[in-house]
Length: 249
Image 1 (cartoon, rainbow, N blue to C red):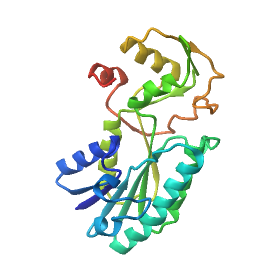
Image 2 (cartoon, rainbow, N blue to C red; image 1 turned 120 degrees about the vertical axis):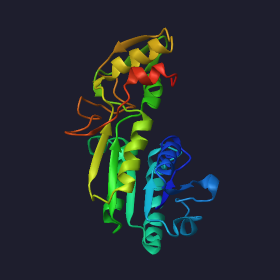
Image 3 (tube, rainbow, N blue to C red; image 1 turned 45 degrees about the vertical axis):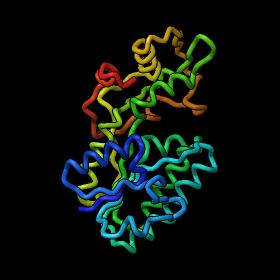
């Protein structure tokens, strides 16, 4: 089947396109660099011609509150009419675990707005929420940097390899629309500060990591439930230490 991946040149999109092509599908990697821009609508009609499935893994280039909201709202305004016109049978979207619990964050408010647009679009859908990617643990650690120390909360995370997220999306894309939201997470749940210590040790970063439960998460207060999945998530196969040992950090 023809599957269009919006944001197909990004971290998740690149891997997703590969998985789908290996499965024998006709995959169009759609991004502004290939002449397809969901925010402006450029190239959408032609890209979606003959498509049965659209997978949206695009992300805003700016995380500023107004900009990120406009990105997801504008994309939705353009995508769904184009999908209806093309006869798309399944819209799959990537979102974030904990979205409804993190609405003090502008980014999470924008993701919630995106999810609501999907549910009201009239296009059959499946939503997959993912926890933080292993690839972002370094940046998360750096967010707590204060001179020669890094102060981070002990609230739990359950991060996941981007490859496992892409694999889960590929499986959902070739199945029928569920009309539901599912979750994917890594196999290990630990305090955020523990993941940071493992990462810094592996990268030979000598800064001291200090547990500070007032540190928050990019300005938001979190607890053990804020960014971790509920019951029965899809679990990735790759452990954080395996991912590090493969030279990904």
